[in-house]
Structure formats: C-alpha cells, structure tokens
Image 1: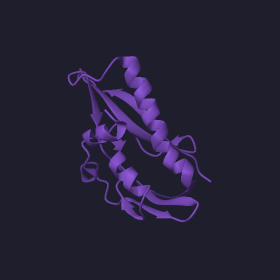
Image 2: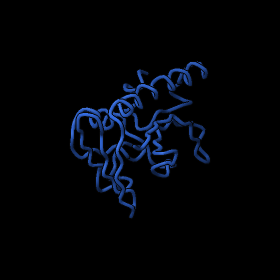
Image 3: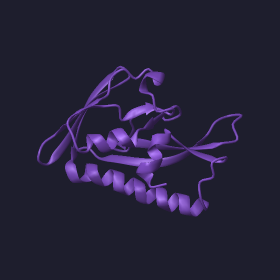
Image 4: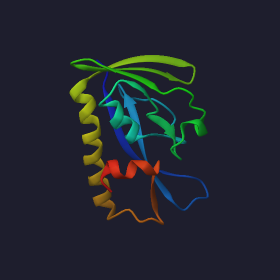
Length: 142
C-alpha cells in the first residue's frame, strides 16, 4: 500500500510581498510534483474520495490545470477497501493504491494542520497570505 500525505505549506515568490498557502501532496514521502507553481485542488480531491473517474487533483496555483499544461487528470478507482490512482506526472506514469480510510483521513489531517498553522499565525489577512487555488479556502474551513 502507498501512503498519501497532504501538507499545507507557505511559499513566497521573489519580488512579491504576499505569502501563499499551497496544499502539497506526497506519496511514500516523495512530492508528486514541483509545488513552486502547482497545488492540490481540494475540491477535486474531495470528489475523488467519493467517486470513480478522472480528477484534476493536481492543478496550477490559479486553479486551472491547463494553465500549467496539465492535460490529463488522475484516474481514480474505488473498491471496497482501497482507492487506486493511475497518474501521469510529466513523462512518468504511475499507479498507486491507498487504503480507503487512510485516503479519507488525509484530508481530515490536512484540516487539523491548517487550523493549527493558522491559529499560530493569528489569522489569514487578505493582504498578507493567500490560499491557492482560492477554491481550497472552504475545504480548509477558512
């Protein structure tokens, strides 16, 4: 079984006073992409936790996968105990199998992490820190 972890990380771009909170993903302790321009779309991740199909879980910071030249989503299939991903990251095709409950727990763990991080920062101010893609905001309960 593979291990999936979602993490909330702060990024700062050169010559940009804003900070950005990005959801990143690691499988078996390795990042699935370069998250300097990419992020996990929690709306797509949530949908993939409930249904089979193709999901653009990996996306551009703006929320549009095509902006980052992502042409194919992750193929997700559920059985009674597992969630399988068939994914193409760049030129590399991979298949992963996650225990279903651990897959569902990844999002809950991320929400706990987000609450702890944002509580330690005091709050997210619109002029100082931006969650990208913006559609992740309600999934983190912000």
